[in-house]
Image (tube, rainbow, N blue to C red):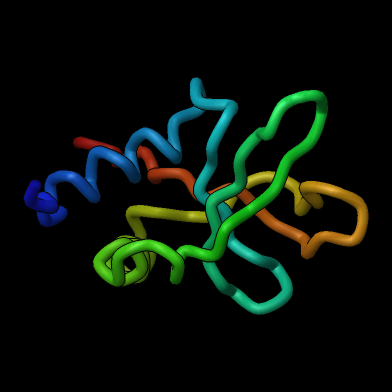
Length: 100
């Protein structure tokens, strides 16, 4: 059995999914405390947790950083915690482009 290598297209699809307003089970987050990226996810029964983006393929972090520098991803909303004592996070979403 071979392991399929992730492509930039795969990463882009996942980022679109994680930043979607319709997706409430997993979200791309920015730590207010240190600027690190995380995936926040609902674990059921009112519990949430997060995973640092560094636990995924390095292409995820590189792509997120490039999108932020290009002003295509931005943090929105009030800072929140996922559970008592967790770091503060803000959700990352794609910026709507104005086409004139």
